[in-house]
Image 1 (cartoon, rainbow, N blue to C red):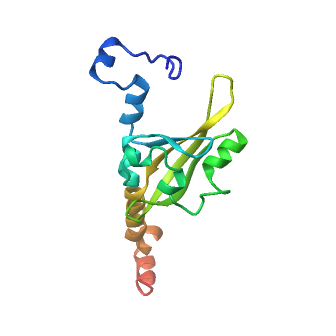
Image 2: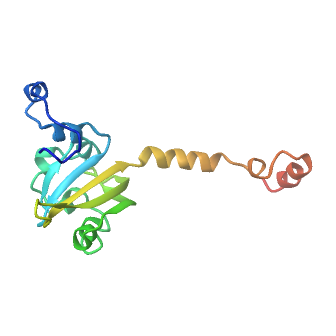
Image 3: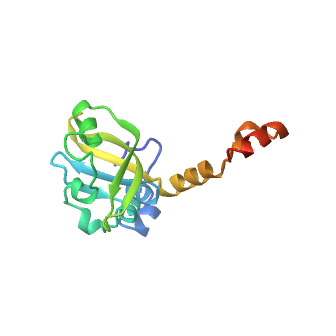
Length: 166
């Protein structure tokens, strides 16, 4: 797929080590879940991180409707991928929750964009996402660690006043 990533070119040594193209190797290596769909919402690409986050193996996801793999309240008319494909504009860094295979809610930050053929016709969409579970746990821990004196300072009179509230 020359030209998809500027400056990237497969070398013979890279192609001997695996049957994946250079672009596929990159998409398999990033710490983002990535999947693509065709115009009928069938999953056409599903990377390793998408497998980890969703709990579905690539073989199970490929060819499935995206809403069966990434069930959430936005599926259907409010879907961010649908918005991107209808408008032709990317939807960048929005937060959603999806249910994984085990029905566990997973908070994600997603970006959805259109896929076009060489003539500029929209042929599908791509969505990248990152699991926010660890980030949200840290944010909660930080929020819960603050007390009045962390916010108002270390002044003795103020601490005495707020100790009656704390």
